[in-house]
Length: 193
Length: 270
Image (tube, rainbow over all chains, first blue to last red; front, side):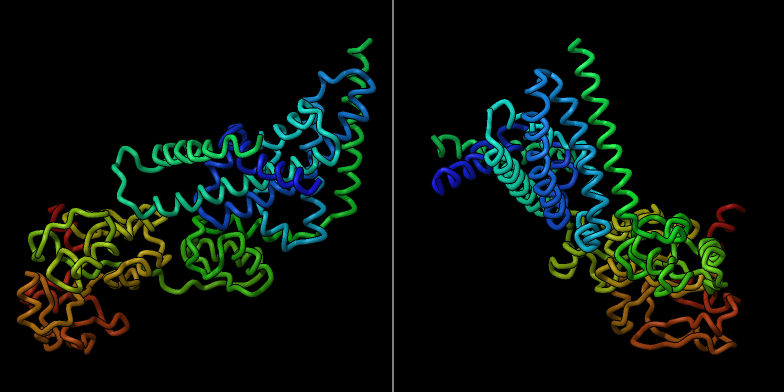
């Protein structure tokens, strides 16, 4: 059991990394990765939301959509769930934990439009995961996202001070680095059978 | 039939979520002082950090909480301070408007260069390479660290030194902090007469590295009738409080390093 969970974790974080192998959540990955601290906040907010979204989407799918035989409605209902959930979590945090709220700041509402969240919900459904596995998938995949965005922020902080040809400055060099990182992550393929 | 079920499900889900959110909004309602948003509107909005807070939002919250002065935002100026004062019910006097000035005239050709710098275009980096490309240890390096930091687009690089547009400058002080040579100072806007050099080497050394260097000869000090000039550390300095902007010092300066702001434009116009 423990072994299986560990393998699943490695698979979610490294081999099937959301950004580098599934190419989901690229927008915040490029948008919020200019500083390590902000990228950590973003990663944590995503982890938080993806875990809860996995749970709720699984419940909606298996308790409502499957019995009613309208599974084709999954995408739109997942979007609804995620949007409502993020709103709710934001209000809840504002009241109960202002510190966490100000740490996550603007990133929390931004996650509504993060395709990685919808992606994990859809994946859980397509792979036919059970409830526990779905939630674990949400958490671990988000940790993979956290790892990727923090690594990227580190790379970009270094890029700031390096001598880059004018035509490559800014976005071009960022995309090239992201591509190289994706290639590096391909090295993890085959780690999990 | 299925389309009805699908529609009904979405409607129900929407209603349930809407209900939950409405309830949550009531339940978790947090009182926020609406003045914070109003104060935030009046600020410079550049998140420059000159006020000492993490950003405009943090400063606005501090003003409302009473921790920060209403005139703490330099970019907003007197106008902003008045507006914030009105919101907070306090009167504000921002004091005289300050402006950042580059106290160096070492353009390329005037200040001697000891090597050609072709590395990363940053003053801080260049200054670390054998003391920078210019012979003068105090000169503006002209690679634009201040220009990059300026949130108001008030600084431009020309002939190897920085120029600051007094109209656009809000005296936030970012350039002053950034400059590795400390040649940028905040001075009152009305202080039109200034000594544009901070070279504290001896006269001979200073003159050897720059045509426009202050050699600390003291002729301006003798000429000044108001005791507004002090010569210290090898260069002259004008005290804004005593100076009457008569310009007599500029006329006698043998090194042309005392300038009168505005005079140049008048000459160019005529």
